[in-house]
Amino acid sequence: MTQDTIRFEEGKPCPVQVAGTGGGLSISANGDMLLIGSIPNPTEDQIAAWSGKWRAKLITESEFPAIPIFAIGSEDWILEAPCNPCDNEKEAPGFCEALYAKDDVVMAAILVDSETGLIRKITQVPLDEMFIERLVLSWNPFRYEANDYNKSFTAQEFAEKVGNIFKMRSSKELWMTSW
Image 1 (tube, helix red, strand yellow):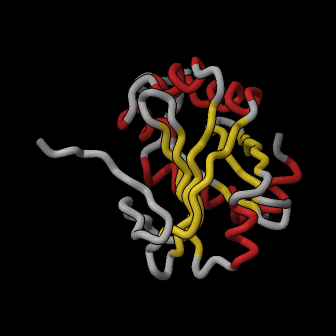
Image 2 (cartoon, rainbow, N blue to C red):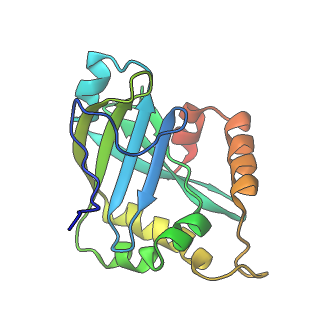
């Protein structure tokens, strides 16, 4: 009998293929959150900050799902984690309800060196109940097939819209204007 579980271990190659750099957020059908941060050659200060204080906010745009954004250690390091709820729903049906139903939400955060593919740091990040509530409220309309009420986006449309948001304002500006 083979076991199909993925294991993340510091100092080992990341078992999940990470394309490019930045943050990638996924949520399982039982409401577990996983953030993989991929940056080139993380410094010792960044590795230490990864285990430090995290704060989370949501970038909201009209007719667009909220984008989680995190300040890691301080507001000097902002990591965006765009995630298309339509894709999440296909991969993990009912994730919003499961996420909202959890008593305490803790996100597994994995820091990967994008140059080597090695995991540099793993930490557990407790997330504020209000952040989760707002995230679920923003994403829940994407629970069903799109119609006029709950416009959804293909992967390409989502990528273009996210790109446009980050062209208009820097991560720091988005952090300052988000809730």
